[in-house]
Length: 392
Picture 1: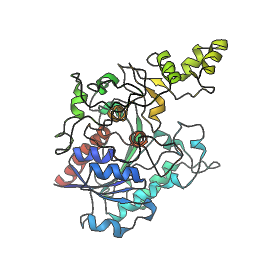
Picture 2: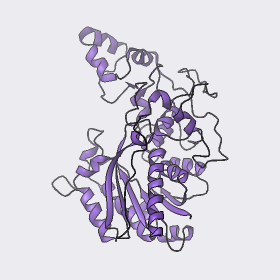
Picture 3: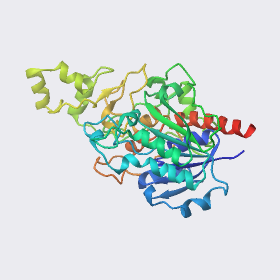
Picture 4: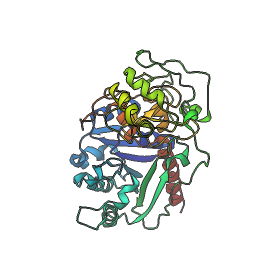
């Protein structure tokens, strides 16, 4: 049985990668940012990718590429900026992005999808529709699902570590069906043993900041996780290359390298501000080892024997390697997100200022993606649900 999928707000393809490993055939993807489209198409050349604002996408652009009787599932991981509590001001914004879930519902209706899966940060469950309203966005989503005929739904918050992702990342999901009698359920944890940062980065050699020398050869170190990241059969990616890529060191100023050297595992810039006070701090600031302003989520040295904190679009600034005095490479961030080593982040530059909404560099693409192993867990669960309903 061919299981068919439409990928809304597809980003660089985290959901598609996991669903593909679970046996799904993604027919159409919709993405606004060109660099994400480039990465998606390079890794999933069989998918018809629509490069457009989803609000402008018409039935005529979708229907020729899907079965006449519709698709099995539409996934919709809409942008989370207005729901996130990570920034100081992002949650205070009230704009049309917080209603983009409507596009996921609209595409599901066009495609006659049996199921639709929404993904976002858990804070979506407490965000109101406007500053002076008590109505929650998530309640509007549920009401509009019911109005569209998708009133049979389940909701859950899942932590990615429970599904083999070496990262503490909580995400909220709603799975809805247009069949009132379809028995819905959510993925159950596949492991109770957390994958650590050390296991995640196994086999990736050290690279020297400012050297310009990209790491191209794996070391002999291995872990069950690193082997899975290279298992082309598991990911259904036979034909792709597993050669080490995107393992390029960043350029760091001498004062930045000195700051990194001061950090113990589990410490961040905030700890350095707490540790160095008075004249000692002033001297470090004078030499630019410490910045004038303290950023809470900056320069956190990862802990080798624990999972990583949540990987975000700012992961280059937020994380320091657990052992070496440098930021993480693109491939190291991809490992923390559970992207397979064969994944080609061809879209966009390595780095771009966080001022452009229409460009995402490689770090931003990775940080904003859904971890493929988490998507794989959903794919396996959805397959089970669909096969169960067919048997009945």
